[in-house]
Amino acid sequence: MRANKQYSARSRMLAGLVSLLLGLAPAAGPLAGDKAPASKAPEFSDPGQLAEVPADWDSQSIDYELDLRGSDLVVALGQQSHPIFKDVIPEYAKKHNLKIGVRHGTCGITSGRLRKKTVDIGTFCCPPGNSDRLPGLEFHSLGISPLALVVHPSNPLQDVSLEEAREIFRGNLSYWKELSENPQPELDRLIQPVARLHCKKRPGHWRGLLANEDEFSPRLFEVGVIPDMISQVARNPGAIGLEVPLMVSFHREKGEVRMLKVDGHHPTDLDFVATGQYPFYRTYHVTTWAKDEKAKGIARDLVRFMQQYIEEHSEEVGFVPQARLRAAGWKFNGNELVGEPDDIRTASN
Image (cartoon, rainbow, N blue to C red):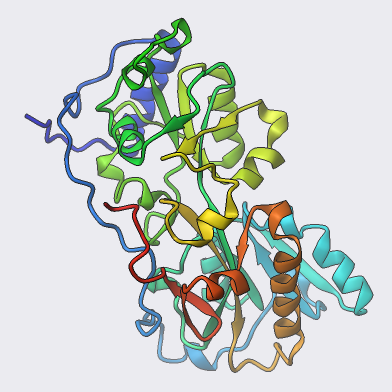
C-alpha cells in the first residue's frame, strides 16, 4: 500500500540530508515496485486567461526603483538568463547609446517587479502561469532548453529510461544496482535524488518528470539555487539531479557532474529535442508592455536582439531557438510559444 502521508518540502529536505550524511535506508514513502501511472502536467498556460489586477492598475505608468531612475530601459533577468545576457546587454547599451538597468532575480521576483511596474522587460525560465499574464503584458519566446539528468562522474551508468528516471525521483528505486543487469561495485550505492522544485505555480520545467511536488520521494534533497544543485551532485557519488546543460557548464566551479542519456538520447542532441520527444525542458520568455510609452520601441528592439542572439548562439547556450521550433511544428500565439508539436510528444507515454 502506498503511504498517504503528505511530506512538506522541509520534511523531504531533512530526510534527504539524513540520507546524504548517514547513508540511511530510504525513509517511509512509496513502496518499491509500487508504480503509479505518470500524471500529465500541463506544459503551457492559456494566453487568454489574464491575472486579476486592481481597477486602476492598467492606468499606472512604469516607475523604476530609485537607484535606476534616469535609465532608458530596465530589464529583469533570472538565474537562467543572467549568465547569457549579463555581458551582452551592457555591450548592446553602449553600442546604441542607451542606459539600461539590469536586475537579477528569479521568475517569481520578475513577476513581482512586472506587477509593480518597475521594469520594462522581464525574463522567465518557465512558461508563464496565469498570475504572470498581466493585462497589457506581451510574452516573446527565446526558445527551449532540455533538462539533463546529472550524476556524479564516478557513476558508470550512461543511460536511463524515462520511467526509470521517474521511479528514481518517486523513491521506488533505491539503489543504483537496480538499474543494471551487470551491477558494478560503483553501483552498490543508495540513490540520492536532488531537485530544485522552483516555480511551483507555473507549468512545464521539472513537471515533465513528475507532475507535482507530492509525487517526489520523501528522501528528496531539495535545493533552492542552481549552484547548490551542482555541488550536491558533485560531492555525492549516489546523487542524481536535474538541470539544463548551460547551467551545468556555467557552475562547473561547484564541481564536476556528468549528464545521462534518456531513452538513448543525450540532452545536447538539439535536433532530437526540437522534435518534442525529449521529455523535460525549460521554456524561456521575455516580456514587453503593449501600451506603455516607456517602451517607445527600444524595449522591442532589445527583445528582437535577444531573440537573434539566441538564434546565432543556440548551440553554445544549448537552446532550440524560436525559428527552429516553428519549423518543427511547435505552436505559437503571436510571438509566444504555447504548445508542443502534434502527435510527436512521447514523455507521458
